[in-house]
Structure formats: structure tokens, C-alpha cells
Length: 599
Image (tube, rainbow, N blue to C red; front, side):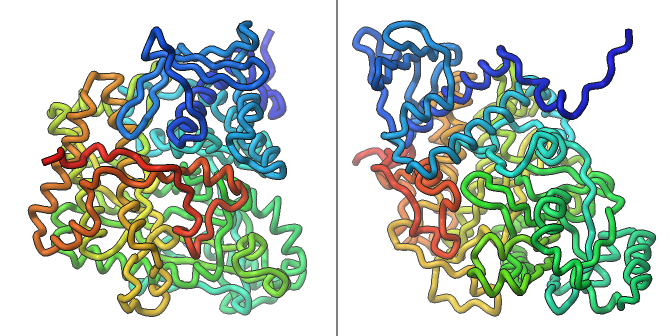
């Protein structure tokens, strides 16, 4: 008897069996205890008779017990398979949502935010169960893996955040249609936006016509134009605009109904190209024409501390900002020797709804529902023999707990020391230079960095997500036009955290732990590599000696900046983008693993 294919309703729950759900909860509870311990939200106690076994005792007889190693930067590596829960001494099932409710007082989450956070935790569990059920490629497969297959294989997103896949707003069909792990083909909705409401901007090396000719095939462009003409409209009065299908069906057809009815917005149809969602969920990669631009669009779902809209007001200056950063990078001899580059956001468009604009501040989510930008493809920047990989892959472990970074080292001609030195020189050295030479900081987490590999060795890095996540921390520098938006006032003592937190705590803490626990590569050896990279840069740039002293990367300790505390404090808007430093959450300090030994 032939089995009928599953319906969408059946597919939505196909991965929700008891064993998979238990595995997801174990993984989530383990991560929760590790990251909450790192942020000093909880303090497990070491058992008297075994220094590697810890217990966390809570109210009503609840106790968690596990074996762990506390590594550099107070990274808690909980040994797989050791986490157990008891209630009054009786074994109990691990449940991540229950764990949050048990910890609600120490987490400091308010009563209004708690149910939303529980929804985010549950949605992240749902996603984790999906990934467990589907397995994904082995770590060794990443060695020859396709750029987009690797992108879809990531299981953690941002590794520090516990609730990192909330995606509140998606239903179960949306999950299989639009999430990066589903990797389903997506075709974009295209609309025509009247120039009285919409503003298009582009880089100096292109025009609107040239950009659209590059992104739409001639037949599609002609068909879209004909639809305007058939309605008696002049195409010169409109700008073509891509819209995420979810945004069209769930937001725009309702909230922009008046704009559609009056012809300020005209539905054109679906484009021909298929795209794939990236880890940054509102950014899509063109699968049919990989050298065409990524498209990033407003997507009004709540995910990891923000509603993921796009500001039409920010879009106005995006290409100008990207051109300015690109010129700076290309004009810097040191950055060029390191091969460091950016993916320019070369065009943007934003639509202003007059009624929402009159009713709410420009920063409100209702004024961020219809905007898009186009970002260059990295395939235009690589040479023969090179391939691309998201840097998030270096923190990834497969279903058998094998690491991708380990597989890359094994498949390369280098030993661990030499491989790490090459990686740090490709990744960290340019960021050090941007900080010390230009007071320029990026958001260099794994999703925002693309590694260029040769023989499985990183040879250079490409930075993306520029306009929204770049800052100039010297307010005395006069910046032109829209670029002035990059000027950010940061207290002097916090400036160096852009390196300590973003690199040391959020990237190197995990890489060092993976290499130590999987391969026995010592923590001392790893952090010596980091220290050597810093010293090599400083030795090559004596002109910045004063800055090296002022922003001392060898200081004994640095402030512990806590991302989960941020999300727990306000999971609807973690930070004010106009004052990012003003919202940071700190908890004591971390011992700097590269601090100079005492004299």
C-alpha cells in the first residue's frame, strides 16, 4: 500500500516525538545552565568529594547535578550526558521551559515579559528538535561543503543567547518556508512603490536603472512595467521593490491596504529567482544567480530581542555609508595586505506610510514595515581555488559532537598552531587595525563574517551587515552627510569592550573550549596564539603606542557584558540602537586570558 505524502499539518509535528523532544530539552537546559552561570545569574556549587561535579539547588527540592570544567573566561563546559535533575531526590525529566520558571526570580524577568520569553524558549526548542531530527551534515562534510548548505546547517545561531530562535509571528508552515535550517526556496513578492512615499538610494557606481537591470532579468522587468502601464500608470512615478512573502501576506495587505487601494503601492507579482534564508533570517541569498545581490527586507517578527523591521529613514543613507566604509578599507594599505573587505549594501529603498508616520515615532516598529536593501554577493570577491564559509561554522558541532574547526584543521596542510595563527591574522588583525587606526568598530560575530578558505585554511575575511552595525567611536571626527550617523558616543572605559566582548568572549571563548575539550589543545596554547596576534600587530604599528596603553588588551581583567541579561531585561527591544552603550548589562569582571604575567 502506497503511503500518502504528509500534509503540511503532519509535517509540522513530524519531528516532535518523545526521544527527540527529550534530546532538545537536554541540550537547551545544558546550554542554559552554562550561559547563565557564565553571566553570574546562577552559581552552581562544587561537590566536596568531586571537584568536577556541580549542583544547583533550587526551591521545592529541585536540584540539578552535572560534571563540568570551568575554562578560561569562566566558560562552563558541561560534559555531555551528565546533566541530571531530581525533585526531592527522585529523578525528573529535563525541561527547559520549567527550568526558566524555576529560575524566574534570579533571572529578574518581569511578569509581562516572562510568557513571551517562554514562547521564545519553546520556539527555540521546536527548532532544535527539528535540527536534531534532520541530522544535518557531518563535520567532515563541511570541508567540501557548499556555501549555502553550510549556512543552513548551523544549529546555534548566536551561541551565547539561550532563546535564539524565537521567531514570534511565524506559524508552522512559515517555519518550513522561511527559516534558514529549512533551506526552502523562496521567491520574492515585488511591488511598485510611488515616489511620493518611497525613496531609492544607491552607491555612486550605479543608478536605479542599472541596479534593476542587474537584479531582474529583462523579461521580468518588462512584465512588471507592463502591469503598471496596463493600469494607466507611469512607471517613471514608481520604484520596483522586493518584499518578503511573509511580510506581504501578514502585514502589508492589511496595514497598507489604503496604500494599495489608492495605487501608491501596486502588486506586480513574484520574481523568477529563488532565494534562501540566511542565519540573519530577513536576509536572503540568490540561489539561481549567486553573483546577484543578497536581499534584506523588513520582517516584522520578534526574534532575539528585536522586531526585525527595517527603517526607511536608515535606508536613505545606507549606500552612502557603505561607500564611505569601502573607500576607507580599500584605501588602507594594511587592511589591503590582509585582504580584508566588506560586502557593500549598494542599494536601498524605504517606504513611509503617512498615517503611521504621523502617529508613532520613526523608531517605532510600525514605521519599519516596508524597506529593503541589496548587499553585494561574496562570489564576486573570490578567486579560483578559494571557497566561502560562514564563520559561525567554526563554533558548530555536528550530531556526533564533532567540530567543524577540527575537521578543517585535519583537512588542511597545517597543524593546530599554524592554522590558528593564520585564522587570527585573517580575522582579528584587521579588526585591531580598524579599532586603533580608525576608531572603527564592526559587529564581528560569526554570522557577520564570511571566511575565504584555501586548502581549508582561512586566508582572509569579508565583513557584512555594515550600515546598521558599524560605529565610529571618535565623535571629534567630522563625517560627511549620512555617514555622520556612524558617530557613536561611548564612555572611554567601554570602548575596548568592542574587542574584549565581541572577539574574546563571544568568539574565542567557544573556539578555545572546543579545541580543548575535543582535541586536548590546551587553553594556554590557544590564548597564547591570541596574545601573539595582538603583539605582532602592536609591534608592526608603534605609531599607536599611546592607544595601546589607553585601550590595553593585556589588562588583567575586563567588564563582563551579558547578552542574556539584556534579553531578559527587555526581550522586545534589547538595546536602543541610538545609544547602544547605554543599555549594556554588566556583571562583575572576567580575568583576561592574555594578560601579561606579573613582573
